[in-house]
Length: 291
Image (tube, rainbow, N blue to C red; front, side):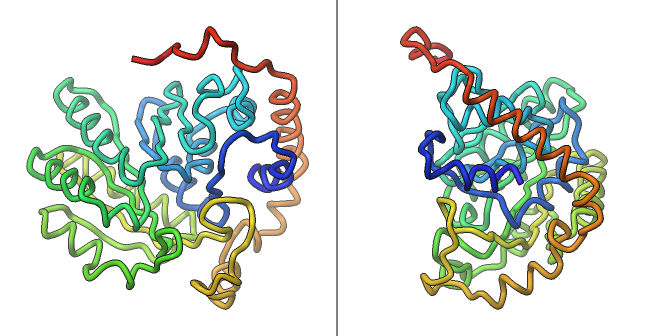
């Protein structure tokens, strides 16, 4: 519903950055973040709206960030693609594919060396596994025995290119070749199953001190970037979309929607009003937080 409000607002140009929507993939974020505390660190991607919310980030500060306002979670300078809220363990996202994966590996190295009771999670799409830095990161994590959980949100797409058009390997089998235990969860629409498998992987990660990978199949409802539906582009079919929706609890669980919809609408309205009434950043903020 938050992202549906973003879709409504986007033509007004109040939102100051491109948006990559999480609609269709929410169950993965919910299942992952339910296993984490605020001290646990999650490194996301440019498609991280759902993770920001599920990790406990404030809707008011998130909407203000999208508006580019000074009260945003990053003072209006990050926007949609670089959402972060370290107070709840939502670490920096990035528009550069796969670029936060080594940050997660570094955080896992620090957590181990400092004896921190902390779970480190790297979230990325299947397209990120095409990148060299992904290979370097999982190799280093395995070599150094780092307790980091790699979560691959596999929506079978890198922009408009399907996985079979880009990859000659299986993501899980490839990870295993680096000595990383890996498994696939086909039911990425089921947040309970996501929670169970993530919880078990974190338990095993903590007991062994070694990295693990969980590949979760999911489905992106909207276009790669923007607020529309692009099924007329010809790179994916409506039939698969309709099939996934039949299992989506946000569509099928009508009773729960009725219970919570009024309160959610209220919170979203408050977030929009907060953003609209917030000040713009001043020139004095231009170089603040820049190292």
